[in-house]
Image (cartoon, rainbow, N blue to C red; front, side, top):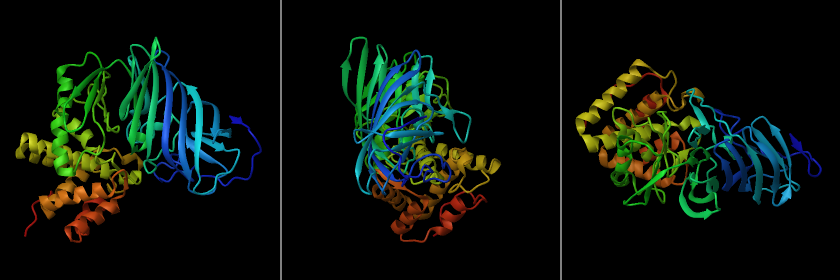
Length: 451
């Protein structure tokens, strides 16, 4: 579809090819997003949304046109700095040509009005859907790695983090839930608009909304905690989430203060086993805690608030920095809550799993189909355990705290963590990192360093 508003000039274009070789169709060049204001009116019965997304951004080069990621939804019009722009759909890209060119360094605002029935897309590592997921009780969003653009126009790559606000208008008795703080509810008679503010920078795949009936449960803790449980969930499903205050205190002692304004779990009554660390409000299926040790699932997603959310990957090849770290953090909780034997048994079980089923690629570059495979999680966590044994607990946790502090609200690559570990420990640790992260062969099971 094309809508013309003014002459089309030879373009100095922001690249529609994203910054990441794993998913070159995601993300866009030429600008940095600073803030997204997402206004959605949702008809849950028909799974129909009417939306307006405002992106405030800054040009990183001279631009005659720019692109945003958007999958499937119909665009009515686009304005750049309050003037109609020319738009063209190029697959999953929305190309926008402003009425006036943008100079490098210039702040600008894009408003996109759109509507339609959002649909999820397949995940790259497994057949589960990603993006906007509709079910018989409402909708929810889990977008890792390529689903944010199923429900709003966005620069869909974790390297371009932004703050967010959400205005969600839904019919009663449904609620509209999103990341950050609920700042206001506006009664519109048979509808309610929920206003949410996420004031800390956030990667696009970590943004979420949930539309449905929920039972809010508040808990006292070192940060405000409010969970959103779908009606009818058993106490068994809720129980591991209610240990969040203890877990936050435990991780804060070892990793530094919890990085955001609030926390909570959102649990939908849908029988899938997945969960995603959506920022400040991880989303869980009701079956996600039907596992041998459900607390580990909650601890894993909570730990992601430090590793993955506060400090996000520079590129998707660095995913072990998210998943290996969150996995090892959940094992630390296991060590704390259930003792050394449970911890050791879990380490052994993880090692045996990747012995039986190797990934076939180094975890520091697992390939697009490998980013969410269990070997990345488990081998990454075992690498961290090997590091802990090599440098000792005090230095190990100093390394983690330094890495998190140095990159808070930003991004990091594998090389950044390796450099931090060597700097904090005062040692060249390449002989440890190379076999665990960059080689195919599995190193021996980690043992205490001989001194």
